[in-house]
Length: 272
Image (cartoon, rainbow, N blue to C red):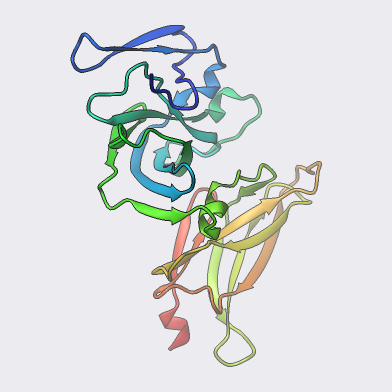
């Protein structure tokens, strides 16, 4: 028998679900546990899937999935593997892309806008001889990624790998911004990214956090992140924050990343 490390869940109204396999005589029985409705609603669309074999003993398979949802506020994004009693004949193992739906929570305010979201799954001791690829499902589509589609290999001690696989912080969130521009510094050939906006809590600390890259991108992503020291004081307040972009510029410029929007800023007009 071949099992991914966790069971596969269906929405709570299905306690036992049987999915046909090829040939039709082969069945994979999948057991669902009762969960709140908000916990198991699928994503609107999967946009991309990436695979990486991590060099370890035994090797691990890392699955990265990107998708879009119809509003802000979705949380706890993760991939849920199907459970098989017999390995799939085509070698394609399946996962559901799920998250918590904010519309089911009282007091949660969301913005109806197309929002990017992602999830990752690290498969310890995956069956190397029977895995040829993975298929990730959303509520509207699915994406297949084969292991021979230019997959990458990373060392188990690679700093980037360890960083990407670490749990995400629960005390920080992306927040929106109003204006973003690059301004020259007092010293020649120095430049600063200046961001203004409104934060939802009076005591929220706003920071600009550059993303981490293996090689220089076209536009270097910089996130607008808000953190709370404990109990939040729910009162809106304007903020202005800046960061030096020396050493964190892409080949074309920078991209400011907020909760519901992004803005690419070309550096050429400021550095010529």
